[in-house]
Amino acid sequence: MAIFKRNRLSRLFKGRPKIGLTISGGGCRAFYGLGFGSILTREGIILDAISATSAGTAMALSLAVGNAEEVTAYFCELTAKNKSNFHLDKLIRGKRPFPHETMYRQTIQENIDLEKLARQKTILRFNSLRFPKNLYPDHEPAKRNRVIFRMIAAYRKEEALYKKGIIRPILTSLAVAEGLQEVVFTNSDFHDAGRVEDIILATSSAPPFVSLQQLDGEFYLDGGVYDNVPIRLLPEVDLVIAVHYRPESRKVVEMLERDKGRRVFWVAPSREIPISMWDYTNPQGVKATFELGKRDGENLLRLLDALL
Image (cartoon, rainbow, N blue to C red):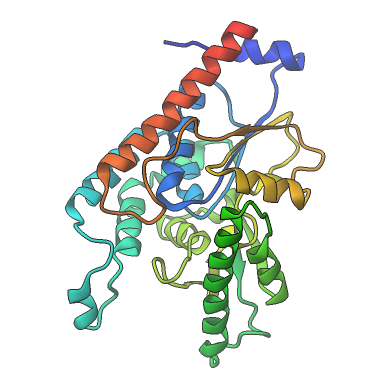
């Protein structure tokens, strides 16, 4: 049922508006953004541009090729088979004990539709952080490892402050202090399936769950460390729809004035998301998170439909 047509938005903007969508990173929580975005595309709202980072990158590409339902169903199948988020038996055998990267890669590999991706006209922009070789030469991996440990400590400190109601972008400040360089991937970077997979993983590199990734001989870290709601990467649009999962994410953007000059409509879950960021054992939680995003999208469009 088409409950909200493009001409309704035209009443607000005096013509067909240019719409940009930003999907925050957040591991499994990003399925909320996928669900919400799938309602926009289902109801005929043209997304002129999408920016994202980390897991939001995979969700953005799923929206671009129109297979949100299939991606969610596939990932639910994988999580139903995975019984633990830490496999001690693999650690004993000298293998990676965390199943996350393998499952993430498999989902990407099985659901990339390069032909559809090449045909769609939506502008795509995704960020990651690169270790510059002049500061982090290949023969000194200890320097990169120290940054990773500092990032983990900074994340924990940031989270502890959030619980006290204190907003402080410690991760962003650390990324700048360590000399990491933001890299923005665009449509022209997606020229083969292997490249798409590498870019998604580069934007999502979050040790220990997703290892430090290499692309073209350089190491990359999760772009959400620097900017987890990358509104500023979007081209000029009439309206930005920014999907995030916690109020702290919005407050950081506003504190750093990364929304300056933008008309932003902020979207957050109407209730607590029913899954944690790195829980790859919970297909019910993944599906419920996706459905919550869809339900919130439908409710929002019904409200706008009534008002307009």
